[in-house]
Length: 155
Picture (tube, rainbow, N blue to C red):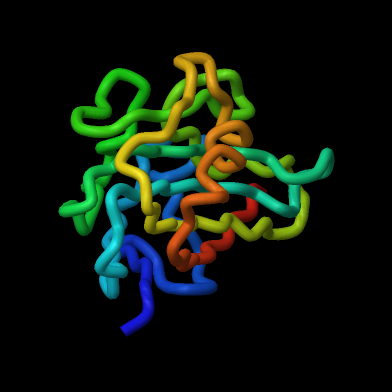
């Protein structure tokens, strides 16, 4: 069974609820994964916006998520709360999750939530590591990845 990523907040290709965006409470959505490769020692969970005007925008990277975890609860990835895993600095300059926030009146942007099963238990990331840094550090250890894409547009 392949690695899969799902959310009870939105389905593949559907709209992301306002509460998970900069226009709402800006809390991370609930996410769950199945089909984990046997050799998995940790997970990396990232969210990017490939449709940002300046190029790919990194909203979140949570890493060193324990291999026996199969989900993150809604709001579990705030700047102050990340018990059990680490978080990188996003492109807003903050640690943790910062939700979708495309320019007003722009077309709907695709937000790619990606789970990667890693063959290493911990990444050698410095405390000031950005999301892009962590994603690059993880690349040699990726066993398998899965994506969940949600859409968001601001009026």
